Image (cartoon, rainbow, N blue to C red; front, side):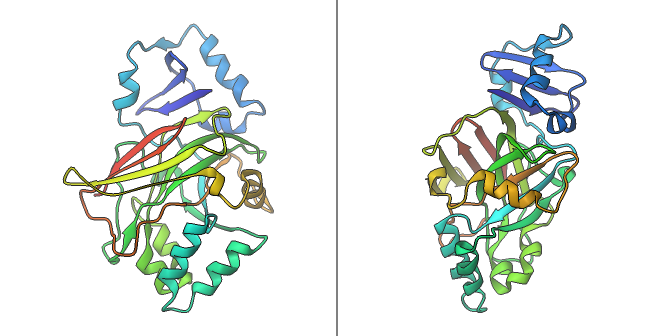
Length: 280
């Protein structure tokens, strides 16, 4: 297992207790590599790498999103809780039936989420829409898929969403999902198999130092498999620098909850760390 952190001007790689700062590393090259593990090992074997002694540097640093030219996509309605929430918010518009259908359909819901330049990293601010009165974070296990369509790593994603806009009409989904500060991933990209069906995804939202929402689920509750989602994303499509794919959320706050400016969102996935962002 190797963790990749993106800093302002370079990258930091962690292999268990060995932490190095490297020059010449490229996420684009990693996503294009036929064997990502071999590409990473070459940097640990290099004499040009700079060792980092303090692990606290890793844990408390405001890392950038681990993205270069990768597109970020997302899957929807992959958990029963997500299906229920989408149907609830769309009931008045008559769009609830579509979410019921897509949950049971062979073809998953996939949508474009963000370019790399728009993605926010660990400890960077995320945003809520000023023209929406109902906004929530969506904690999501996120797949790293190389240019050949193979899953080789994982990270944490926050798919910020406007439930009021999407609920008004399903055709408004791009406006509900794609806007300034609507996507955060990190704190790092983890290469290697660190997941089990019992792997827990949890979220905690704090407001003025008080916890106002928390919840958890496990990836065993995901209806679709990771290879299935990756396969549909790459059908009749091409990603020269690979892609990230958020796999949907199984944790949705009740309808009475909405984010406010200043809220602090902490998303934890076992083996991947904690992604923390404050609402701007």
